[in-house]
View (cartoon, one colour):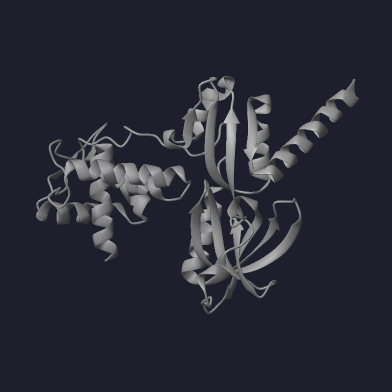
Amino acid sequence: MVKINRLLEMTICLLNKGTVTAKELADRFGVSTRTIYRDIDVLSGAGVPVYTNRGSGGGISLLDSYTLNKALISKHESESLTLALKTLKATKYPEIDAVLEKIGAVFKNSASDWVDIDFSFWGSSPNEKNKFIDIKMAILERKIISFTYVNAEGGRSSRSIEPIQLIFKSRAWYLRGYCTLRKDFRTFRISRMKNLLVTGETFARKRPEAHEKLEAEEYSRMPVDLTLEFYPQALPRIYDDFDDELITRNADGTCTVTVTFPEDEWVYGYLMSFGCYVKVVEPPHIQKIIADRMRSAMAFYEGEN
């Protein structure tokens, strides 16, 4: 199986790079150049048009017209698959680049750079790639992880978790697992997990009695139904942030938006980011929260003078 995987990866490498030296391949696969040449003989015997050029600038190549068998999937399907993988890549899921490289090799005429998807905000820093890889391996190998967790209020706690599942929800990655501190299942936002360490301690996977027990405060805040009135100055953002079906244009030039969000600090900050160009129509308690915070902000700045 190892040899078969090496032969397939070698073929993909040659498809993508054109010409590669035997030493480069040997270094990549951790084998001798003699083994690489034996692999070339195997590929050639299997009908793969591989050949070698000696001398300066030479190396191992495939015929330019050669591609892997594409009978099982159409060009249209390959583009849909590329879009799906690019979307997954945008969520910062690791190891997608290698898959995209293989798809590009199989479908030489289907470029993988026709779409670029990025869910991150301008100015944000990406999640640490190694963190995802470590968590994934901990889940698969059933190893306990430890980390410092920073909650929504800025409080810190040391946690030890039996990881179960990675989740992508509402623009962020989360981890479900059994918390040895709380003696129950919890969900943690991965961007708030600091100093993560995969321990050598293994665990027997537990099953929650009900799905709801996996839910945690980090993304299960109570939803709130909002009715918002936006003034014309906010229109460029409105059509960026909301679907047309949520927007009602009014005769006076304002727009009314009805939307449901989980109620938390993000919602308050989001509404305040529109300044005087949004009015909370419903519900009354959100009206009061935003008004109180606006007054506090004004008092803060007036106190500076």
